[in-house]
Image (cartoon, rainbow, N blue to C red; front, side):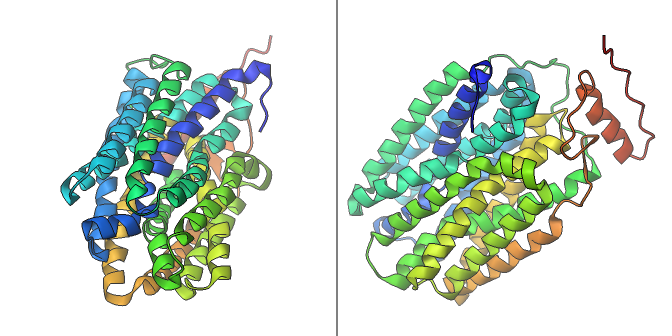
Length: 422
């Protein structure tokens, strides 16, 4: 990924976004799954309770998402990202200091809200700071921040074995503070949009495959992040080093997700969608069939890492195309539906695993991932009034979304205003 001197703001924004998404998702949200064996031993948690806690961490996430779309239109992206960073820092600090389940759950829920505050506002920031031709690449790069954080978390968990997990969470909290300070310098102030503008995007039928994909992506992703380490540790019995090494491998492979925007530009959003959900389904099935076999575990990590990280970029780019006139509000709606899936996934599959075992739960989740293949965008789909890959003419960007919304409501679209080419 390359930016020249004229696009330095885009470069800084990408770094700020990668750091914020890394701490809010890679540490605050998914760190729970990495340290699950330690947390279960420390606090005496059952598998079904683990699933309920995993789902509870997404409740605050959804609550934040419900407010982000309207708030970003009024206050701009910077305050919301800062709230997200501080929520991650305080929540992970509480987890590190927890002496009982009550404070642990409180910290996890507070940390879980951070990703709800942080991710969607970057769509608005990219819209304001990055030239049109590079926006999808920057959005794809920002979404890959989770992978970079997972790479760091794995070795840290290996060093902080046993009771040392508390020190790892303190490091996570300090990283969240550092990321928040950097974002405070980089992100633009103010809304950059008229305050009279509504915060909610106009509904359109073209959003339905996107939102269904988001729900299914949330279900399968939350199950994998919550229970993969537990399944491997239970089956392999090779000691505490297995989980951190698996986590690091998954994160390292997931760095490929930084190229999500480039992949979509080259192969099209439909092909990328089909490829990544095939990969996720196979990764889940491998843990269901052979969690005690090292080749299967390694292949699962190598498949899941890049496919899941690319999925985050896919949703961001797809949302930007469907809702070009309200990028942050549109991404908030998309991530809200993703959140519905993440709430349902751990609780339902955790209860299923309590009755039938984790292997059966992973196989069932693989089938759910396969269902997402039916939600791929159709060939020749239009994005906010534009064909895939077509750039709007100067002066036409604002009217494109309105004309698409009118078409989706059954009204004849107004012709575009002529562009002054002098």
